[in-house]
Image 1 (cartoon, rainbow, N blue to C red):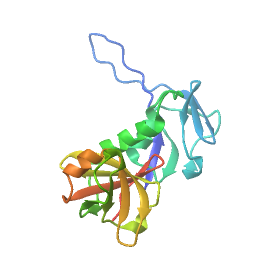
Image 2: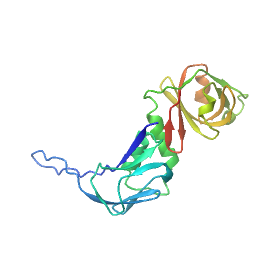
Image 3: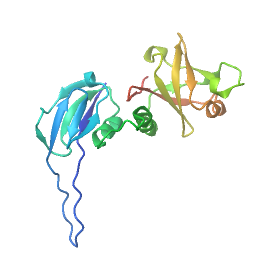
Length: 200
């Protein structure tokens, strides 16, 4: 599995003048610590610091905007970019929801996994309770993981609630949409703790 690159993305915008001025990259102080990077007094969260495979800066180092400061394992590149570019994080933000939005926005990139079909496994009385069987590789998913599936340019998020020998059981966030797309080919990506991992 490849490495994602975690880099600072601060840039100083050129002032408006009558003649073009090249973009200036402004040096800034960065302090690294387990689980966080501080840039000019603000904090960017690294949710699982044990996934850092290499730290390229020391506390107090002067760094350039765009410089690689961390190498992360098992992270989706777009999410790594998001983490690097965020100026601050507040408790009011739903980080998990935000990360899923970023991951699913990349679902149209090449994905190797294929769900052959989805099958409803409960009566459609209460749509919130609708669960589906997905015929995919059960040895590469775990209970509790979030799965993003794509069919006909529509995306559905679900959670793995049971793993069997030849299929997994999913609880879908949008079961009504899922039921309209049953028995059609699906592409799939597993999203787990801010990382999106495609599988064969």
